[in-house]
Length: 254
Image (tube, rainbow, N blue to C red; front, side, top):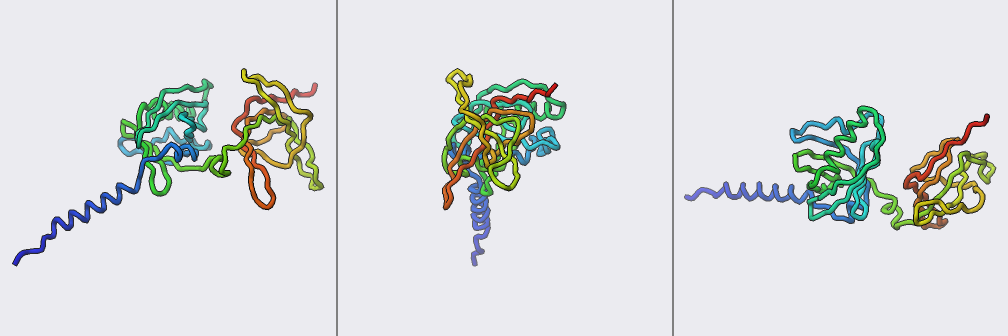
């Protein structure tokens, strides 16, 4: 009597399992990368040991954002960016530029490691897991795992409208009986050479806040802002800061 041919059957089962594991991660697309801000959650070296230098207590984790062929590295001491090209799962990074500001020791070390692993790493492999995490594998075996946060453009479903808003150094009472304080805002315009051309009238107290901006009494700011329309029974607007173009401290009274 012939014995059952068991070994090949076991082999088929194992191969199927490996194939299923393989499809659990896929190569991300340009559109998917650019739809999110990616926050670092894990980082290991080629030996599988945690890269502690990339995480600084009391500071938000470093993050990356992909925008129209540009890669920005966020939440470091200096602003940092580079060009990038995606071919399948292979990411090619063009060495970019950064601002040069002195940083305290642990923050400087974090930035140094980030530069080496991200903007100075000419190539890497990106894979997208089923749970949404993005794995960035360098040519030297380091693995960075990023978690996605939808960009404002993704959340609000539109590219938004770009505004330049000047915010007064002091808040003012809102036009309501609640006694709350409101931001004082007016729109400004910039020329093609980057110089501010004009402000539109007087400051106006507004009842809305600007996401990503925290007012500090005594500081006036000019912000680059994206405005998004919110549909619904009562249509409204959302305002998101894309960064301060100018900050001026109010002179102390003598």
